Length: 232
Image (tube, rainbow, N blue to C red):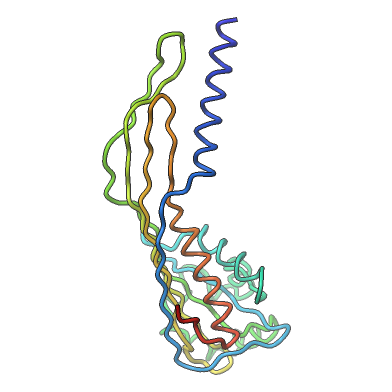
């Protein structure tokens, strides 16, 4: 019976922990910038490709961010049809494989001189390539939370843990038809997360990456549609 009671208490405490993670976000502030170099627009049936920076280092843009950006840009108000990074690389095989792909948009012109690449892009009706660069980093962690089994077999945690997180991403938009960069967008989110623990730890997590993703997706939809940014 005691074992069952202890197990039940453990399950309850773990459930409270994850409930706190889901419903108690930390404070996040987001800033965005937009620089337009040429007019834009997109016709029905045309798609855009969202690609991430691949550098084989810890500063490589996260695949999870690209998946988020793809999902949010292709849904909701003003949605645009998006070809994922993987779909685009597969369609352009082998020219956009990691070893042979352009490292940035400045290398795009010489790639599009290739007739095979041009023909493939026409077949998939791709109009813009969105090149995303950036990462989310966690910094300035302080404090700690210590957990142990208290009297009666009940797990208990005590302490206070904090950390800062920053998500900084930039999207460069390349017009395939004209062979030019038409603009750059950026979203930077910062936030403080903290975990107070008096018996039960309750995390307040700043979801900076999710905030930056939502901001950049809305900017991207408006920018490609040719809309000017809203001044606040």
